[in-house]
Length: 327
Length: 287
Image 1 (tube, one colour):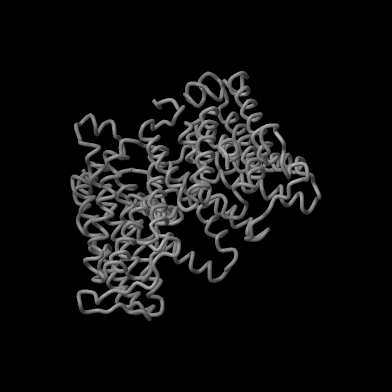
Image 2 (image 1 turned 45 degrees about the vertical axis):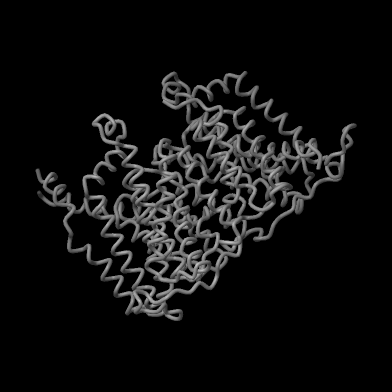
């Protein structure tokens, strides 16, 4: 009875859900010299959040999610450089639209498969886009990419701060909040519940008559659009786009971040991105030559000892603690 | 370049892909373990060969044998200590673990040997050209083709004509059934894993001429190895062989005629093939 009660209530906002956002605002005042880095953390959180939707909730194992990040980044870059379309918000909308369209088209074709085949198909789709970006040098700048992009004021009010990244940081944080609210609403809706059902037992979902493939395509498209948004934001806040935006390393990186934080938990994207990027930053600073070893060892240790990520570990201890209390 | 030279060059590249990927195909087919660190074993093999030849003065063939044994031994240690604990883990945990392992290998090699590209010094008898009567061709590529053919015949015989091979094939098809018949699937896997990693080491060393050898090798070629495995079908030696030849030749041809971005065709072809046959060209449809 208590469990059912909790289940029915869990979509309601909890007091602690304000904490990440308060922390985000606190960063702005406490670490004014780290806002360029923090902006990239926020962009990565958004990217990881989009992956959580397909991977954590719908159970689609993909190694090619950077395809959509890259599509968004290149959309913003090409619009700005080739068409002088420098208005940031409409640029982001275009990025999300293009990435979403690619997600819809590829999802329509790919989502019939699963396991290794799906992994390979997503990987190949991404590699295909990467090669296309490499070949279309007239549009994309090829291997050198597009450096030195500049954009108009955000909402016509706040210009991009090239020195301290103050406006970029708040801009990214605000967009993340919007995206987060969207994803949170989505996963707690009946649509989100059916995704979890598909993840847990796809045969039963077929049996109860749920339109499995249509649901998967929809969530894949939404997730692709969000990843495109993250990519567009990356292009705007850093002012450049190059081939690394849709490489295997970025796709693997975001996967690592999400697993590290704990997938299927919304906040795993936030925790994972912060933990991974701060760790990487500190290791790279302290051990410029050996830091990759530290990252690798951390990943191996996490896989062996904390397979559910940081949040999974926290939940484990929380349950243990509350379990000891008399009910 | 004439047609025959292209075919020979493509076959040599395909052989390298085959030697590296065959172990991955069999181990993934057996345990369903997505091993993204497989390319790392190939890279380590290459480095063992380079270091053994440079510092201990070993001959090329002796160094190859050493690389096979050393990497196979290392893989058994890793398999027993680490991999074995994750057989029942979620796919994603396995992905995280093996990417982490690949990072560790890359970092370790960078630390110990350095970030620069290594060259495997070929002995005099492997350099130069050989006259085939109708064509002059690079001796090394011809040797690669011969080695690849010998290996595929050996592996095919081992798979199709021995008791051990029959067990592996059976376990790929239905692991639970086979273990209920009293076959120790874990031991089967350990042996297969060791041989597969040893072969990858051979491939890393033999293929350094074609693929190069530097610390970023594991992730750079990961996609290629996975493509070969996925197109060939899991746990199918002949499937991997055909896929490796196909991809290797295609890559070779595209690099000549479309040096810039020709690989796009390989990805497109893989996409089409996998959509047409999700289980690979030779794979059996799963349960």
